Image (tube, rainbow, N blue to C red; front, top):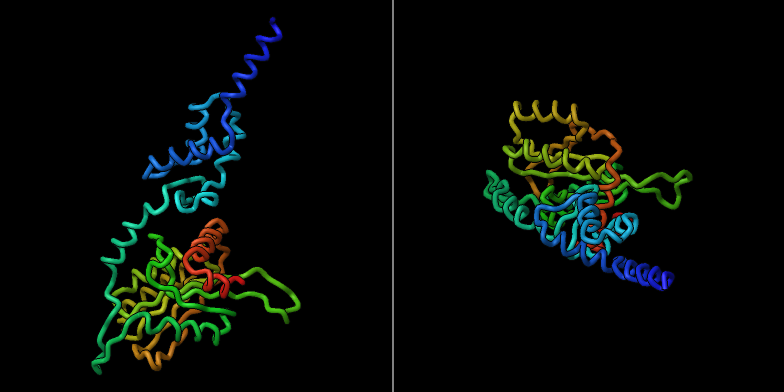
Length: 273
């Protein structure tokens, strides 16, 4: 009888333990009700409180890669931090609505847009041997409040290289409004999270005072600076300061790569394939 009671207790205990799928379903419900997001350790603790019989290590393993298992429901904007997917969309739209004007009229009456200079600059970066491949992105295509670089390139080993090396990411922010220099600088610095090098690309109509300040900031933070003419047929890009090489944060490198692959698989393949 005693042995039978022990078996019954053990059986009931096993029944109370959550399976991996049940843990993930519970985690999804918890995250969905946390629009501000929730820390990984807090999430694990909350699940363990709701199911004390479930081993903590089982919970940890089950929720570690939730953003990969349920990308449409869950995002991981930072290390150890989960958030319902799409919660930053409003922020992005607000940034877009209040962003600097990207259409201007030249003295000759020709309308120009920042997008007119994306492809020419991508080609110029390749001619400069800063990248092997470069593509234009621009806008808020990746749906990130940290923005999307206007141009992204990669410098990667080719078949003929005797010594291989890790892929380097080069990001660039282009502005046609000379008053937007500080905005361009802020965005370029943010891109250093996932980029080996970053460039700020500004028109030659930039005032001497703003140019001096921007050069000093670029020197301090290692960003590259390029000037160009507001002529979409002949922008004549000129390098003022080459970008310094930095080691990006691999967490954000992979986050950027995942976002790009979901947004535009063709661009991802061009850059990283």
